[in-house]
Length: 366
Image (cartoon, rainbow, N blue to C red; front, top):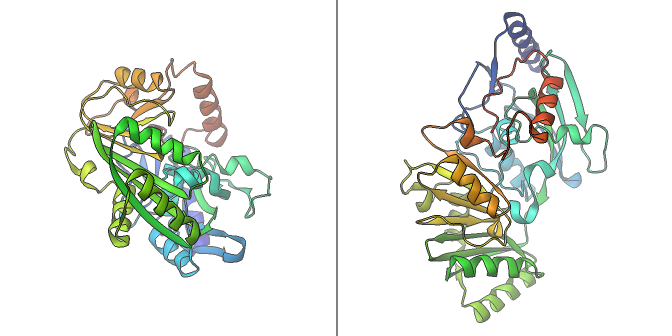
């Protein structure tokens, strides 16, 4: 079955080369709204499913791109393991391929690292229908190691991801969530202070306007979590949240289903990636802050140039995440001319190396 699917992929790519047509790699379509305008004929991976190998003792799983994330997470849970970067699904049937190529990470990114940090190896089919293997299944493997890490965030513009090997981690022995009412400036200062100390912080979130609610998730050894609960309660007046409510809170935050994201959902959603210690951004209304201040969300009407200036002052960049109308200026985080930017030049070279005939649609690269 897999061989037939691979043959079909190759024929579709070769046909697109000959016809000078664009292809758009897609799985379940759960993230079709992300990035720029959809272009090209769909090349579907949804039937290319299955776990190639899973080595719990080695903390690595190799999966075919069309495999639903929920199925893989269920397999990992049986061994008390997880994807610690907590990538959002944004759909019940979201696939591993979409997860990797979108390159998104959830609340756990601040402590565990980005999705890219966990990609060990990849098998892809390039724009000439050639199958290539990069990396491996262990952290110390360096053969083509960096090439496999190009796939996260590539939006399928470099080639068709077939299989991917991902490092997994054990679930923490204990977890708890505490919360308190605090101003945005105080929350940013406190998150960074606590993060600089040996507390088992695995996620953070503040939401509100001038004043709001700070949630901190503690994960690790039972003794460490209990010590943090006691200290945070005594020193900062934080209260423990019910475990079930806490689980719902962090999942809704990851999937952007909570009240803050749902309110004024017709307004454009901006993402500001800035230095964690930056002061509150000069934006009206409410904000939602994650990653100890490093990721800040804001909803409202704002032109691209103003957004980038605000982010630049905080040593970061800005881009539109959700909006009914988008343009390239809203998607690009490059401050200067994208045709002459060193980063843009490198990206262009990479795309041409993997896809010399320009088969894969590049319009969605954000």
